[in-house]
Image (cartoon, rainbow, N blue to C red; front, top):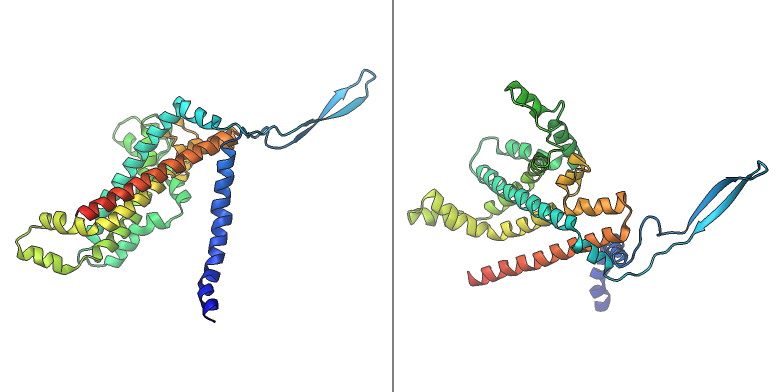
Length: 313
């Protein structure tokens, strides 16, 4: 009986683990395998073509031509192409700019709003619900809405500029403003999550700490730097890490707002185009593995530094 009871928890875990294995780990391993092959849209499967030829006597002959699959193992050739490509390093730089800009404003604006909502406000629940709307709305609706706002011909922002006699801007195609447009869109989308997470952390800070700080004569600014931030750090560090991982892989906002604009490409959209547009399956999977390695290495270093800081503190 005791043995059965010990096995019971594993029975409940099995369905979830099975779905993770099927939907996450199996595609992951298949993708890693593809990254070591020369697989493309043209050589992945056997292809059969029927060719119509006109004979000398006027008859029509139909020939069938069969092209076999020519996929083979090529080692690290795809990875060599990735790191030897100038486009990769350009896009990698754009990805870092995109990630840092978004996460910075997510945290700063989210923390500011969380501090405001943590005060004694009238109708606090209503304000909190309103501020959560950008996060609750499906991201594709947000992307299409901002795409209209930034439209160069009839968008809202160019309409406002025209009212002040300022020439319109090609927000979605210009090499500089296009990245600004997608950053603004994603900041709008991501601030509410950061806000509500940090608000939960703020509400977990004991009031006794602030009372003790007031007795010691600490100002509001000193209470923020000496009490609020240190106590909020565990929640903030995890939230920032999640934000970095999500933003680094944020494909949908960029692709839906600016589509195939190379000036807004990040590694996620670059890999998507290699796979679905150019049909270079092996190369695209190599990009995906590189992204996985970068984020895994960064996460491990990030957590290690955070742990070391906690121990030293």
